Image (cartoon, rainbow, N blue to C red):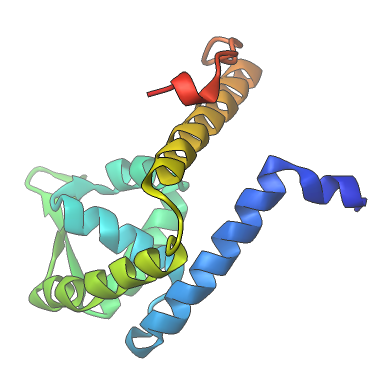
Length: 164
């Protein structure tokens, strides 16, 4: 690895992600939850009754990864998976009372970590960060889609501050 590789956007985003993940893990250690488990729970907290396939799409993981994570959450009695009548493959995911309680315990701690990591950053800088990251994400998705033949190769060239 050269020093130049540390100057890439991907490197900076990855280092930031690792630092925030560590801060979250420290704050949530009491609950013995991994970051991937928390990511799945967050989606279920936002909307119950999703299929395993829908969860995979929202989280951005392979269905086999989703199934493994859900098995762990189910063993911990945080979720329940319910097969649709007449089609056992169509499994929907719901919270248990323990999973719902965990939301009330954990979400304030997640917000506290978020507040800590953005401390001292002006609101207009955070808005610019959101727009810039959205543009980077769209450009990366367009590139991946173009490489796989699923989407246009057009990568947006406008000024990131003009993105919404």
